Length: 307
Image 1 (cartoon, helix red, strand yellow):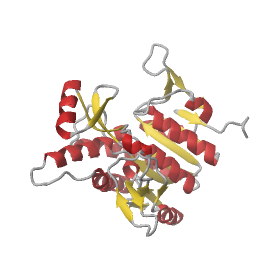
Image 2 (image 1 turned 30 degrees about the vertical axis):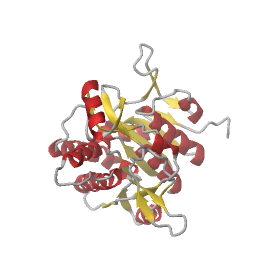
Image 3 (image 1 turned 180 degrees about the vertical axis):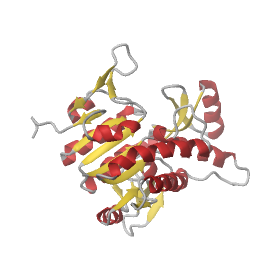
């Protein structure tokens, strides 16, 4: 099978962990171990989040007295793709000797008139107490919103239209290469209508929606979204919380999951299943092999009645 894997940012840097290089290296080694078992049996394309990492780089950039202006988010996104891609490539190289692996910095087209630019929703960076977050918002002109455990910066997250390097990824896959790409949803760019010239934009694209788009364009069989919870939960955070093991796209959308957490994952899975007719699943990193073989996670399958 051809599987597109979407690694959550929290799979690479767990909630509450210090963003030290050694901490991320240890987590990446765990990721490689979980994915190596799949890669021995299937074609893999691996995408990954970058919320904690790009938030850290943004704070450093804004605090650097040597800069006349902080680096824009699209360049910081490119930096995180290179860093996380390198960590993943090296760890997978060690876990799968002899396997061809390539990490690509990829660009994702968005519309310049996407209404998301006027409504920031994508969480980046660390969690702050409300008072600290409000102070930073005033000082740095951030938008902030409440996350599950505190307050975080939010930035625009336009919808992905196309990954510029899709044909290159396709060629690498056909040559037997495991491809790491689409990190952080890809570097967001717009294209000039007349010349096609690309321009970076200040935003962060949702990596799950980019993964779904890639999976569709690459004619993948399976979209695997890995995060830090074992299942999608109905009534999450309430006394009536219960795991959801199986759902159609329509049933998944009825869950009304929040934009800042499970919402984009649910929407990405639903889109892929509806448009391609393949399977998608959401679950925990350590259970990746079991999820693909139907023994863990939440499976999203086509609605047979609609077919």
